[in-house]
Length: 382
Image (tube, rainbow, N blue to C red; front, side):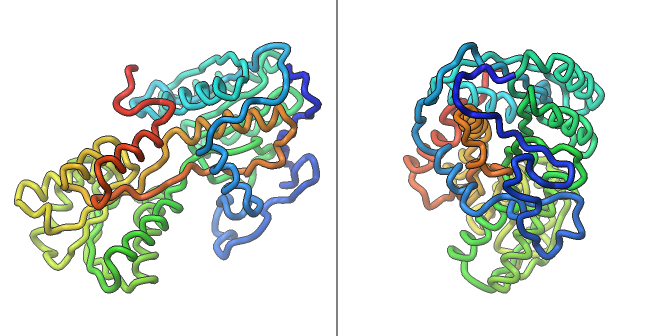
């Protein structure tokens, strides 16, 4: 039930045979070499040329006021694991609502919070939103785990006459969903790995020897660590002498780095797959006075990492513009209300750039301000 008095029709996306309801396209739009090996599509297979880049430019730019009129506030339901310790959900909620304010769109939100492990609670919430579909205009679903919540995503997305469904924190649309949501919003670890690869090769050149503190075997580490490793090895002939699985824990980064320093002194670079391991890694280096001899990387551009760069302990990190997901969702709502949903990418990816130790303090501060321009720099008061 859209309550806008614009001329637009809601352009939600419905898949039965992987074709958009309005007939614009059939997915995938193109096929990458390993498509048959996956049960999901990657962004390059489902995004029309130029749409992602155009949306990223909009999200990074100044707000342009909504051109329509409203009879009542937009009703937005949010189902997500915001009771967990990660501030991803809270920050992007703030980013979405503040961008909606800038756009001049009136809204009301209803939050259905859970923890990451409470899969069945999310099913209860999804059923409740479907029952109350005449109340809501949009539902934002942050799955506790993608495969577990696939049926709930499809169930919500099926209600296209009443609801427009967006998915947060995943960018790999499952091929076998009977009904696809209108859009997916996330950051891509694969894209970040390639951005980091290009930066590292440009700065350090060819034939470098490195070691790695990897996370937990799975898609995230395959992208953050595996894609980075493959890129630098193929493009610049780098050699990887050791890979330690630190399970994304600070202790794992410390233990892995201690072993690397003792047993693989030829490694001049240590690649860390998340903030916690990066902090453990630099701690291990500082404890033996090696922090100036090793080029260390982090992942994500968190406040802890930026502080380590400022101290000269961490050298570079792929930094997410953290508020992009929430801001992009607000822009998607605006486009939907204005009848421009066909301009949106099916999968939105937030921007990732590299923060590094050759930046001035002012440059790092500006990057941090941009990343958290809506939700604020520093820890959230939760």
